[in-house]
Image 1 (tube, helix red, strand yellow):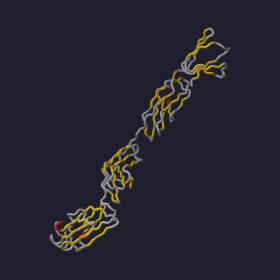
Image 2: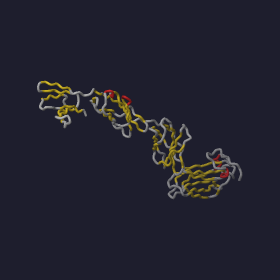
Image 3: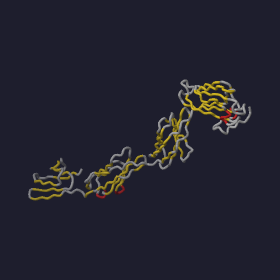
Length: 350
């Protein structure tokens, strides 16, 4: 037939040709190859193209043995002849992976114009969150019931269009890396089940930013006198490189730099920063004090002498070339008696 069928009352109607054809009588369709126990949408398409009034045709429909339509009258359901109606049911496939549909006549002949077996797409993932990191965004969401995998999508503008970042992800979290700090990224996630994709989740956005490492703690060997070696030290920051700056244009990329034979002009503020992936910490600062050079004072009276010095270990020898022996390590004064034709003293600083 070529009569135009009114499909205005049907969501997602079939093509006109479907409603212009039919199978009638008592008949059964078996649809196999389905997932046992999985819920499917069964959509039955009808249009009364023979009778022009209600009460002329009635029939029953069973799906997997369950009565879903009783004394069904197409004209009553559609509201008029030559008008489409769709009866939709959610049914699980049987243990053999089948959906079996039976049409049983009550009055005149049962009939049907079309059948759809659809796997309902999963619901969209929920509660999508996006946490910024250094050049990265960490995503997490709640799963959709029955979903087997997820697709992560990203856009540079809110509302899309979105491009797939990762597909077939089985976890409910993902870290998107290699991003540009300071740029806002927009994300949605969809769920997959047996090849059917859900709608996108609600959008979440984040702006990656540099996360500075902790400031290193700066220290040095103190007390320090001119002519000694300055040992600067920075506490360890895992994965970091270091940059020191200080007086007289001093700069070093060593974690623990050494300056030999420092003068008093090397005193002042030294600072060190830790750097990870281009992110710079707050500086660790130390004020280095350098005392004037150590001088050994000598007082002599009768057969006794007194030596005083501000820092270091007092050494003695009977020959200027040595060997030298320790006289005093902890005190800063020494009193002795003359017991040899010659005796030498000096102070060891480090």
